[in-house]
Length: 379
Image (cartoon, rainbow, N blue to C red; front, side):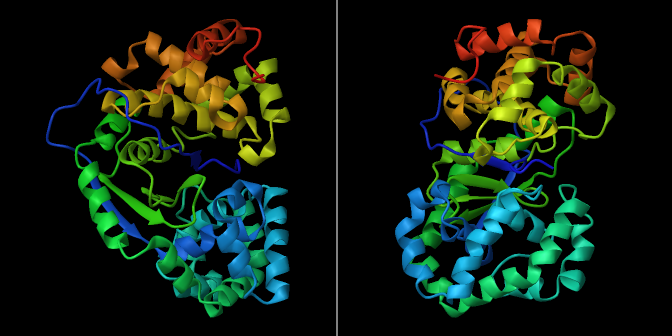
């Protein structure tokens, strides 16, 4: 399981012009709230010392860490390093997803899950389609250490830190986000462009300490920073709920992977890019980049899209060449207009040779506005 299978780095950019709308009534029902428990998990990023997080929360992390027992303060970076060097992945997003199989509300709810994971979490985790036995084993072996961390965070009054960071207007912010999202029928577009059926309810959890990630939880719930603008929230929802776009152990995925594993450029990107971005397996890259290609089409249809060339040249050091190629192929096929079964489409594209470098690379080059022989790395 790729470490950032459920992640997207969200940039709060202006919305693009409205290109298309689907007929009423809307399929999508938005539910917006907050969670002290998820915020405590997210704060592990800054407490771990990772620069990816400290550029947002260094002052808060330094002040709060001074109130933690030295053993706990020292173990958080160790846990993060152990997660990133294993198949578990980035610590806080994957831990949040693991615990999301149960109900995560307060910090006390996190502590209760960690105190008795076999009883309180294991049964529901088994139903989490994004879970794996390998991830569970990693988590179970460290649950006691994590329990010590979150207990210490509670005793150091994390609740007060979160309340001060979010401010007195947080409830108003929840209501504001709820109102703004009402016009965006993400689910209808996802169903059209994938051929799948989605639950109409999308749950958004607004957090104080989640930057730079938005992360998918179990079901149709995702977490994001409370101050992201509406366009960013819509783009996150359009992306996160698509994971996985089709079964990654199914025949369509296997057919695509058998073609892509012979693509020297894509294989080199997976192998040589900075691992802090995740996507360190070809399967993980395929999963992510199919979702990115589809979410770009959905965002364009809803009028909140970023320019695709700028998006994929800038995101994650430009590694999503595959996403640009898939997007270009889908545009060639008029996928926004026709929709259809994306699993069947990827299988057909693999069979027809459209995923081979001689087809995929020129299409990606046109989308990225780059020479076909200089798609990556971005100079």
